[in-house]
Length: 119
Image (cartoon, rainbow, N blue to C red; front, side, top):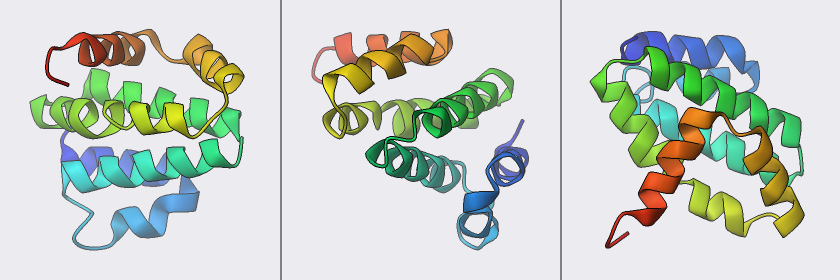
């Protein structure tokens, strides 16, 4: 999956952010598309919409698993990196619930990022 396919996948699966995804310069930019997804995930977390958060994480995992190297890097550097701010915007109980439903691939990437020296 390249950046165009990933943007289309995001727009299809989360119609609430379709307008943001399909407009220039977002469409065709791996990093900006993933940033829109991460921002939407953060908004859903702030609104305590944990099912929507889980839906976003499942989509991010799908993009990561099927994506080319550019998409994998965008997920790691934008979406996974956002988890630190996600964690600060919810209660401890909510964060534990999110970790419980977080796809294994994303959780593993998050743990690797947290344990990386200098981060």
